[in-house]
Image (cartoon, rainbow, N blue to C red; front, top):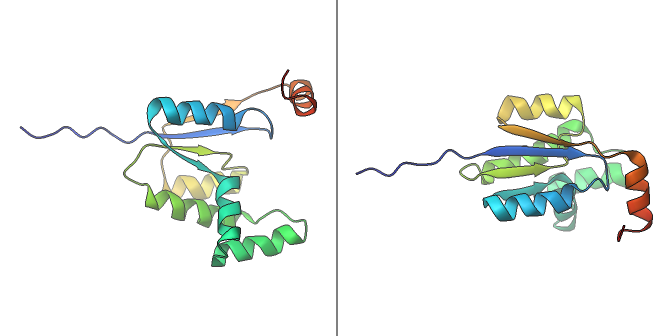
Length: 131
């Protein structure tokens, strides 16, 4: 009898900073046994590890500029290749249409979760996270 292999599930979660992506992501990856990939966390780890792409990204950040779409996309796609056999949740990426187009050329997402939190709720939470 051959084993039936379950299809890996690919999900993306989007939302404004402080909208709860990290909290919800941690619950999803725990409950559904998915790999979690946060664009911001990955960027920080690559900079800390002094990788080529991390150092390149740091040059933009040091100038107060956003990391270009192609640099962020390369970083994410390279990391996704390492977990290709697993279900994954991509947190906070893509942030732009160009990033979404680059990602779509390389990977297929089964679902996109968009957190639509009113700005006043985010502002209140940012001032007092116990609200």
